[in-house]
Length: 179
Length: 119
Image 1 (spheres, chains in turn orange, cyan):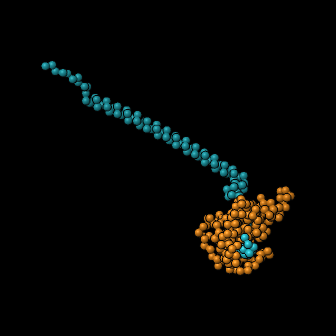
Image 2: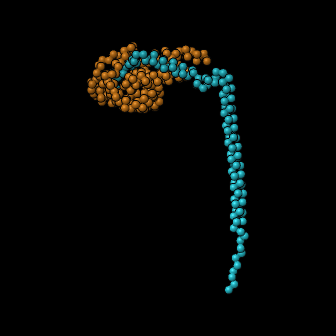
Image 3: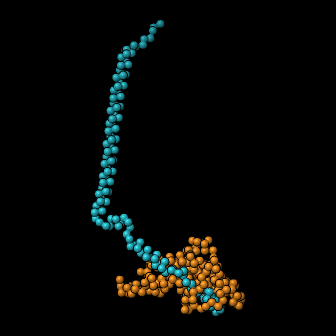
């Protein structure tokens, strides 16, 4: 093992990575699938894949990128395999957003947030993922393109269409009917 | 896109906590997988333990192959014997038939030539 690889290995302890990124991976799967049990299943599988692929990952940034990408793809795979189950959305069972994140803002209007999540949940799968990565993960457009392996222009147009839908559905609720 | 809507989207899409014990369950699965991959396959373990076992396996294979050859040879030999017996039986039957035919001819006497009567 080279010294660089040894340093990387010591930095990338699996247990630390699980604890550090469990919220990110679970949240991507959860927002996409809208079902806590399904999200846990997908998130566990993603971490198991990480466990197998850990030796190939070079840095913490690489791990974050890898986890986001695999979480997105496994969530899509899961939704396609369990189409009927994914449609059963129980809004009351959904956990409320975590406030552990120091950068997180507190929701000013829980009803509006809930309505927004409902609209996002009804978006087409790729559009939903673009919105999740953009607003949950605060990812840049280029990063989203790389994560989802789609062209940058597709990300832009998808986000543009998502905005149009959101404006149409909840623009009035936030006093921006003409946004 | 307005700042207000973007702010509301960020608030609505805050990360959520995974269920309690999530990390422990992941780590337990990883540990199980590691333990599983560390174990060689059962047959490989069995042979990998001692050279004597390899010798036993080789001897078993040789014995099996030898038995197969012997069995085939015996079947071929039995076939040959059966063939010889059938041929002998046919020869005996043939000679008996010939004797019987001669006896019948003797009993019925020599054949008279047929004469045509003159008018």
